[in-house]
Picture 1 (tube, helix red, strand yellow):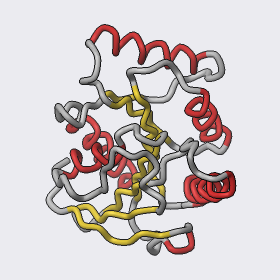
Picture 2 (picture 1 turned 30 degrees about the horizontal axis):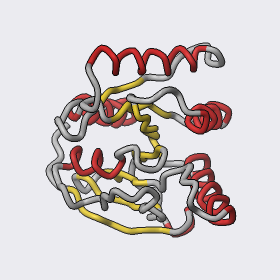
Picture 3 (picture 1 turned 180 degrees about the horizontal axis):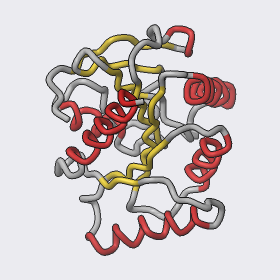
Length: 201
């Protein structure tokens, strides 16, 4: 897939404020500081489209970006940011749950995982929640440039083995590096293939 245009459309504090569900949506989510905004900017070829920051927890709304005037790329708030108050964490948890479970035009959710660290319980719990609610998703292991290829691959395999303890069939996964532009074509093709399959149904 080639991205010809990518424009900010709207920010919403709840699902009720999201655009009319008349276009496919592909959403991105992950723990705070997993590299979500950098990945979105890399995918779209626009370094300023999504707000990036060294401070975790900056995304606090559901952000819709219109791609090629045909589908939405959705930037969801990161989960697990400990410095938020308990009430704020609960508010974000509800916002995220309402969106990923209740948004009928969500074609796929991309769950970003830092491939440089051991499996985190909060990621495993979120993935289990998606499975329980039959939300279509794909794992995206980020920051592939931060450690050696062998070590990185071992961490990814370790994560997948951890999932195997509770999953009969493992979800698809991709590996990306925003800094090195690695995995961009694979991720865009993944989105494009889902759109094509939906059009054939």
